[in-house]
Image (cartoon, rainbow, N blue to C red; front, side, top):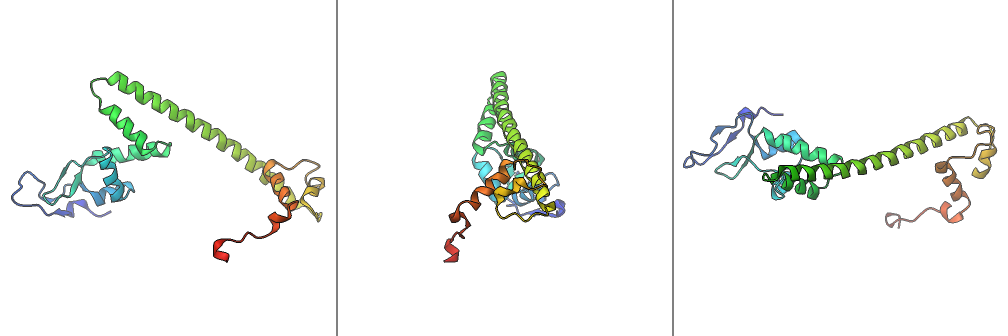
Length: 195
């Protein structure tokens, strides 16, 4: 990252209230903010349109200038997106937070939104844990196949292999054997690029 104290902003001399000279380190132009946060300048402009991000001010030339609070705001947005919030839901949260006259109601709404998102995330985690268990079982079973010295003609005969001791294959492996029964599945699929 370049030294931001060396960034100069061209300012109209007739506008003394605007930022002039070198940009202090806590002031960032949109490109610098994008680099720091990993977002694109286009995304930052979109966030501004949605009311999620506002520049501290603009130069006489119209350049957006952001403070360090913008970095924190963008990290907050990214964290909410990571746990599954859409920009529209984040926008709703921001609107609720702006209602300063009803802080308890606003906080209750935020809490309810976070609770629903947590429940959704916990359900997703449970599905991922089940998938992890399924993959581990399949890999354990397939590890036995690698040690197998028997030459099996059909996958259905695999469970009789001594490496598995009569144990039925897990669902992920059992699903593969269904293809060996279906001749259509053994034919290569022609894709548009193959024609």
